[in-house]
Length: 222
Image (cartoon, rainbow, N blue to C red; front, side, top):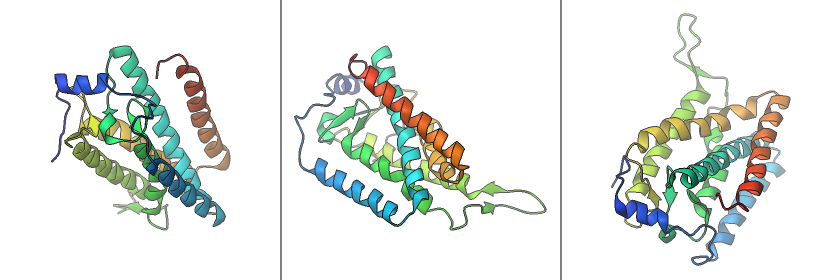
């Protein structure tokens, strides 16, 4: 039911070798429905002036795209990316490691994470005898990262190979630490940054994403 590490098998390598990035071969109308749902969620938060939700969403989603671009570059340079999605599991693959459905989920994950924090986001746990304790934002990020790592472990074990790990040293633990914790730290901390720092963070992240996509896609690198 769960898979915790890549196995380096010939099957895993073959599945990755056969990935069809940005092919419309499996395209269907769920693509449009999912896009409509995401648009509705963002517009609802905007119309209610819940700007913190928007910042959380864009912060995590931007970091997610940087990770996916780096993963695709790793695949181009070393032969195989750290993670991949299979042709059989999606209607459309954006980059070697991310499909449309997964990407749209990540566009909402930051909002979900910040909504799950206490109403007072300055709350700290384990405060005693003058100790500052641990920020609820950090605890929330770790909890969400653990949940997402376990879900990815399940996906890696599915019979249609929804997620593919080739390298034997890559699996749940490195995903949890190096990928998902940074994702949710972004969503939980960026909304409460000073406006200039917050805007700088989002501007740099999304500017870098745009530049990399514009350059690397035409070159056939990602």
